[in-house]
Amino acid sequence: MSTQDATAATGAERRKRQLLGTVVSNKMDKTCVVQVSRRFRHTKYKKYVNERKRYKAHDERNEAQVGDKVIIVECSPISRDKRWRLQTVVEKAVAV
Image 1 (cartoon, rainbow, N blue to C red):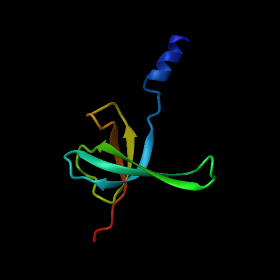
Image 2 (image 1 turned 60 degrees about the vertical axis):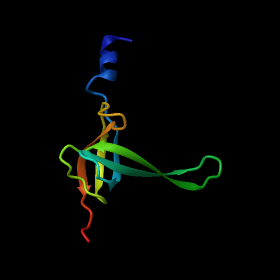
Image 3 (image 1 turned 90 degrees about the vertical axis):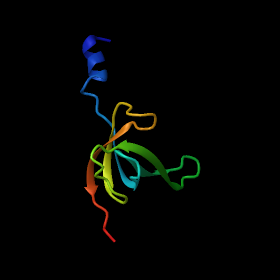
Image 4 (image 1 turned 180 degrees about the horizontal axis):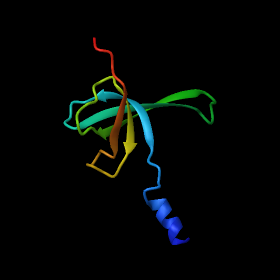
């Protein structure tokens, strides 16, 4: 493996994962909990299954509110649970 290949794999060219989800909690300071849903076909039963996972994301300006659709991007660890960062708020929740 050449040095150029090694830097390309670990350097800035590496694409960070992005996920689209809904904010379910913003009670912590500079942190929001984002629930990401995915739908896949079960390999054995051939039935479509919905799966949900919750991620803690760093929200520097506390701009995400409960119900907002947001994009989170992976980053280096910020705390014990936070490995994601809020990138943008795609759609604001409707105020009741």
